[in-house]
Image (cartoon, rainbow, N blue to C red; front, side, top):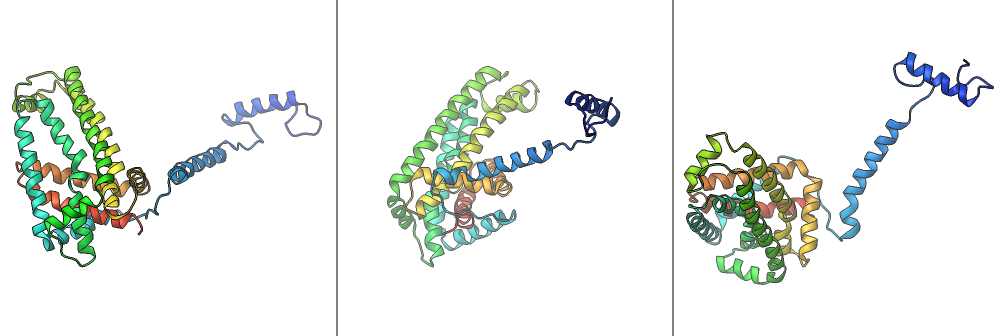
Length: 305
């Protein structure tokens, strides 16, 4: 057998020598450098660049800033200041939404699948419900005082685009209600007569692990999609003359660029809303306006003017 690379070696001999190198050298041909790793890294970088720029190729989007992970806490601080300085305009939203939520949950108390869908639905329709609060923050940012009626008039000025986005959120809510019923029918075992029996079956019996897994995965996926498309979309529609699709794609881009930060922001929203539910909706009177104003500052932080 002749060594590979020696003058006059035939292709067959080089192949034989490569085989010997693999046997003696631990799995790689001797005398040859593999280019597969650099090529794989290059392909990964190209794929990431393509994913990062794909939205800009199809939509004319404003520039999205890359922000620090600590910014959600600053958004809450600024949101609190907006609410404190505009209590007369902010608290009515909290009172109305908390009252509506209480009535809906009371109606669904004997229908566990509808009860859980209603709780989840709060996260889906929250962005549209807080639209008037964005107008309050927008005016406060310019040094103007805003009343509740001022915020409602601001909504009328962007009614068409917000209505289109509201249709999307309504369809998502209806889809989730239907999916919730299907998941209950397929996976849930236990008493569905009342919410207390449902809660004990889920958290105490250990018989509904498949149900919990399916519910969390499917519901979480839907919630993540809605959050990504709406995180800054409604504030953007209130602030700029853009269509609903552009606003949704800008929101998706903002989440893509700041994934860790926006995941933290989503977790904060979920935690505070759950606190509101735990207080029988009383806490929502404060928490919903706070989150609405904070979402405006998230939009301002993420999207350049």
